[in-house]
Length: 570
Ligand SMILES: Nc1ncnc2c1ncn2[C@@H]1O[C@H](COP(=O)(O)OP(=O)(O)OP(=O)(O)O)[C@@H](O)[C@H]1O
Image 1 (tube, rainbow, N blue to C red):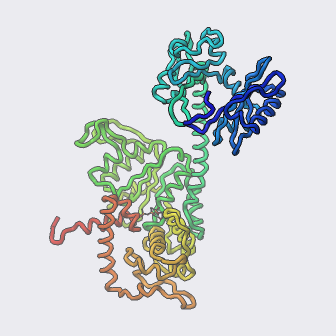
Image 2 (spheres, helix red, strand yellow):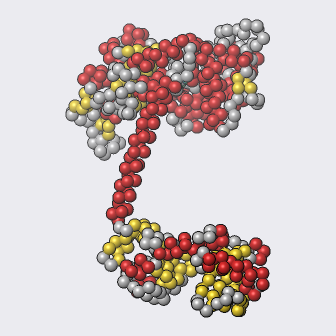
Image 3 (cartoon, rainbow, N blue to C red):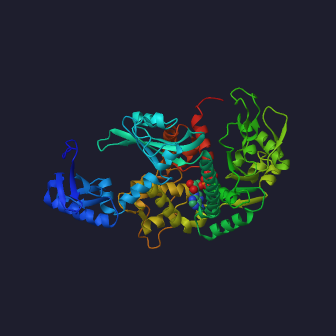
């Protein structure tokens, strides 16, 4: 054995003691007197505790691990010193029963292993493995693993350097689940491999797997429950506002939600009709079903029927081969939210009426009558009375849709909610962009309360969000809203409420714009904004409407106007 390993920082030495415990010979690092004394003292302590593996401190804070090989006449102490402490040295040096732990891994039937070297020759087999293969102790050592272990793949692991975990291994007529790992030197080269049994048989694995599946389904169940609990409060918690008008609205929702009757939500654009529909669904017994959304204004007339009622296989060009369920069928067991219901074409009104009367409908291209059990929640900002009077909306359908009608209050009717809503907008904006939320000055809040808000909450949220973008400081003042005067409907009228002490007037930019120029400018800027947003969102009208803070029906109206070519008669 060389006392100096040139490739690593490992040094070795041997110390031989006589039967009287005195040093007879020494080589390598054991010739250093101080270290030899430490090794002899360490051995006396280890022998007293029946240990054969122990560690002592070496020079320069190194660790020296010593293996003792005692015979009746003499004791050979093999010392290995490493300059930089590695995990094994740390382990042996700091755990005085390290040898017992290593012995446990080598002999315990549940941890037992087989070890091969870089030539795939067996170097060690735990007694339980030897017994299993009918070998005498050490009987497999020195032989190629394929001669000793039936169907072994340890030699492949040595070659590939890749672990194999959880594979089945057939040996002597039984199947075991095993793992095989390559073992690497400090320099990273594969110096051998070890094989261990993970489970006695696939049955054990199957039992674990079914336990896991059971636990997974329990977790899924509790997740659903949690979601449900969250959603139950989430429904109303999403609707911000504590004004008397909002408290009334929340009471109406709580009352109506559990009753399985159609609800019609009316109110100006941006008042929160969709939020109210979600809350009703979440608070209803159908909350575990889905809420399917349909926007009557967004449906091209050619597709209304197939979208709502579905179609049979091959019923028209471009249809999916297998046919498709319509929204009404998808909503079975849940809720159908019919947004912009006032924009429904009259032929669809007739068909929807039939569904609402007896739950039956037919897919496009089929005579089979199908049924769907859904709850209808409709929403519209249209004036149904006027539409019924002029014959564009069926009275009988109106009654069917609106067993209960809930009107969402406009923002003008609940100015006291503006601070809460503005704070929500600032918090949401800050969260999205990862900043600290900005604040609104008292004057800014007064200013917001003095506006008419034809676009209601949606418009308020957008105005506040934009002020946060343009405002340079942490506190938003009234002047920061002057930069967004292109927003449709915003600042087109003088403030409804003037600040009591007259100290805060509307921002200069707003007052400077003359009424005559505003309408033209607003229209032009609006068209430009719509065009830009349509390009940005690739024609996705819902996102465009949200981005611009206008309702989808208003967007459709404006798009239709923008498409009219002057002079054309079509
Ligand atoms: N009370 C409220 N609390 C919090 N956010 C609200 C409230 N009302 C409306 N909003 C927000 O304003 C925006 C518009 O709301 P929603 O889409 O529900 O209005 P709507 O009445 O259905 O509008 P439209 O008729 O134009 O479709 C949404 O971003 C919504 O989250």
